[in-house]
Structures are given as C-alpha cells and as structure tokens.
Length: 293
Ligand SMILES: Nc1ncnc2c1ncn2[C@@H]1O[C@H](COP(=O)(O)OP(=O)(O)OP(=O)(O)O)[C@@H](O)[C@H]1O
Ligand SMILES: Nc1nc2c(ncn2[C@@H]2O[C@H](COP(=O)(O)O)[C@@H](O)[C@H]2O)c(=O)[nH]1
Image (cartoon, rainbow, N blue to C red; front, side, top):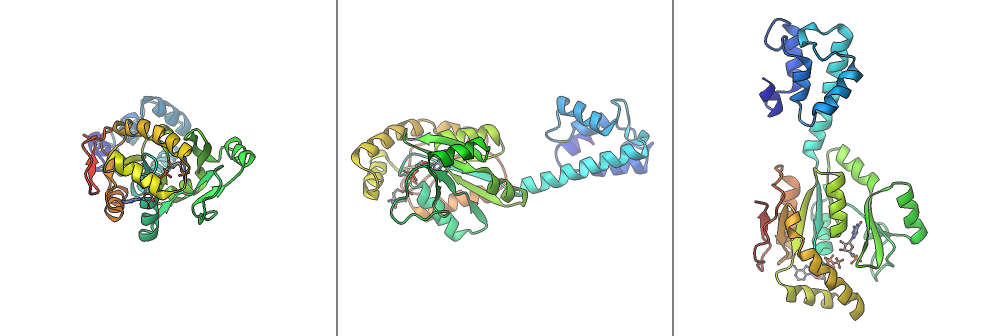
C-alpha cells in the first residue's frame, strides 16, 4: 500500500479515507508517519515538521486519529495533491546554447505557433537592436533599473553575458504560469540555466546545438548585429558553452528552425524527465533530439 502511494498508483488521501472508514483494516492500522513518508518529496526532515504542524504524534495510526487531527491531515494531503497535479501538468523548459545557434529564432517560432507555451521575456541592460520591441523581445532597463530588480528579488536568475550586459528572468510571470498549469520556455545563457537548475530542479534543460562550428560562425556573421570585437567575445563564450552540453537533459541540433522548434515543443509537452546527461553525439544537419542516457 505504501508502495502504491509512492508509485502514484493510489493517492495518500485515498489511503487516509479508507483508514478512517475502517480503523481496524489494513489502512486503519497504518502509521501516519508511514503514510506521509510514502508521499513523494516528503523525507524524514520534512516529516518531523509536518507532524508538529498537524499536532500528530509519531506513534499515531490512521484509525486512532482524533477528529481535528483527521481534518488537519485531510486538508494537508488535499492541498498537496492539488499542487502536485498542477506541477505535473506544467513544465519549465530552459533553452540554452551558444551565441547565434538560433535560440531566439527557435523560441520566437514556438511563441508564434504554440501560444499555449509562455515564452519568458527577459530584462536586459543591452540597448535594443533595430526592430526589437519593448516587452516583446526584452524589457530594456538601465543599470539602476536592473539593480532594483535584483534587490527586490524579482529575478529567478540573472547573469552578465559575454562579459558585457546583464540579463535576467522575471520571476513573477513564470510562477503565475506554472501555478495555473501552463508551460514556460526560458531562452537564456548557460550561467542562467545552471541557476535555474539549482533553484527549480524540476526544470528540463535543453541544449540547442549548431550543425557545425562553421555554420555557427556563418550565422553570427550573417546576423550582422555585432561588430568584430563583440563577435570574437561571443565566440569565446560559445566554446565554453559547447563544452557544457553534458550538463543538459536533452540536446537538439538546430538544422531547420521548424524541426528544431517541434523537437523542443515535444519536450515541453511530454512528461518524463531524462537522466541528467545529454549525449554530445556528432551534430547533423537536421534537428535531432538526443536524450540523456
Ligand atoms: N536553422 C537555421 N538555419 C539557418 N539560419 C538560422 C537558423 N536558425 C537561426 N538562424 C539564423 O542565425 C542567426 C542567429 O539566430 P538567433 O539570433 O536566433 O541566435 P541566438 O542563439 O538567439 O543568438 P544570441 O545568443 O547571440 O542571442 C539569425 O540570423 C537567424 O536568422
Ligand atoms: N542568463 C540569462 N541569459 C539571457 C537572458 N535573456 C537572454 N539571455 C542570453 O543572453 C545572450 C545574448 O542575447 P542577445 O539578445 O544580446 O543576443 C543569449 O545567449 C541569450 O540566451 C536571461 O534572462 N538570463
């Protein structure tokens, strides 16, 4: 029975209800500690705190709970289950990868074709490029505006990218979207991806890889938005980013924008998490998802 709860085959609330209905039955004789510890993400430390908050002693069995203890435990498990349900439905996916690989292009394609996925809009101290729109591409702020966002803890993560400008992910819209069961896509750099992993370990990290180094350089030069010095700086960072692929859950090669976007959307919409390591197999010209092994 405990194994059923741990594996998600039966909810802890169902077991509690069965135990209360039949105090002498199998569920009724189950200790509350055993019930709680079988709930995913409740470990020994949390267990102590929860028992204290519910005013239930360690030795209590479900069938022996008093009226108020029953109410408190039912409410606790009910709330926990509804939070878990909404977390299971929603996903946070981080798309990272070297400069000019096409992160922004793939992310915009997803925004335009999959309006159900929230594409996070970052704050940055970088000045707008021609055609970039405030609130769509970025929230453009000056240094003191960015300092304020940091001081007010309004950013989920932030970093100085390519040793030049600061970029950060506003926390509020993401928390709102996840709480209401929607999926969120962050298009950020490697430092930011690492911070998100630290703060939200349930996030899925996707590495967008170029078909080849030469193609990456072609895309950067072809975009024409950076001078030679800035391009050189970005390519230096790119080498470090390419070397970090193993930290990601999945690797998608951006050969064709629509195909790469489709691969990312499938990762957003499907459930299972991968083991941590992405396979840095040779890149191909097509979008290719490589699962962690
Ligand atoms: N699959 C693709 N095939 C050919 N060109 C592409 C592809 N994807 C993106 N590009 C082009 O590559 C250039 C860089 O793309 P984009 O600006 O989206 O990269 P990025 O990863 O967001 O870069 P950065 O990290 O520097 O902001 C753009 O000119 C874009 O049109
Ligand atoms: N850590 C973060 N990195 C971000 C964020 N938004 C964008 N980025 C990354 O910055 C570089 C440069 O972007 P560009 O628009 O100036 O070319 C790129 O790698 C983006 O992914 C963010 O919120 N946090």
